[in-house]
Structures are given as C-alpha cells and as structure tokens.
Amino acid sequence: MKKTSVYLTEEEHAGLRRLSVREGRSQAELIREGIQRVIEEAGAKPRIFHSMGKGHGGGAPATRWDPDELYDWVMGKR
Image (cartoon, rainbow, N blue to C red; front, side, top):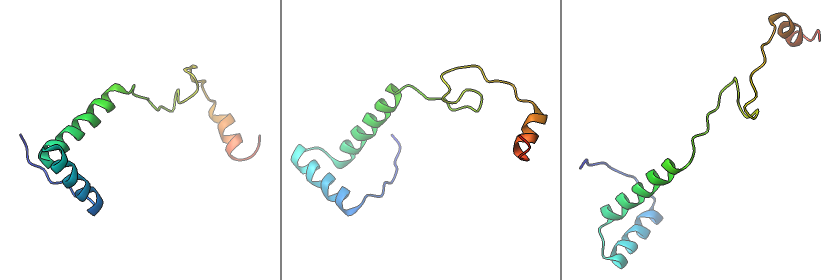
C-alpha cells in the first residue's frame, strides 16, 4: 500500500468525519472506496477519440485539401 496526501475543503472533511463515525469505518477506508468507484466508473465509459481527421463527423473519411484552395480561402480570395 502507498501513502498519499489529499487536501479537502472544510465541508468535505466534516462530511467524511461524520460518515466515518456513522458507518464505523476509517476515513482512509472510505476514501479508498471512493477512489475505487471513480476508477471503475471511468473504466466503464467508452473512450471518445478526438482527431483532426475524423472528429465528430460520424466516421466519414477525411477529404484531402488542396493547398492552393486553402491559401485562397485564408486570404479571402474565395
């Protein structure tokens, strides 16, 4: 097991302390349980890839761009 430090707001600290007393469990145990839940939840979500080639275009293949057309468009000639 590794030791780490976590900074909590006053409200988070008080809530954790109350829950620890109510549940009869250590604060460390509750923190570890919360971390495990976050890890499991993150693993259950499908990963969304963001790329310049596909982005949110529905998987359509990227179209090739012509450098001359791009230059004209940027320079306002189009």
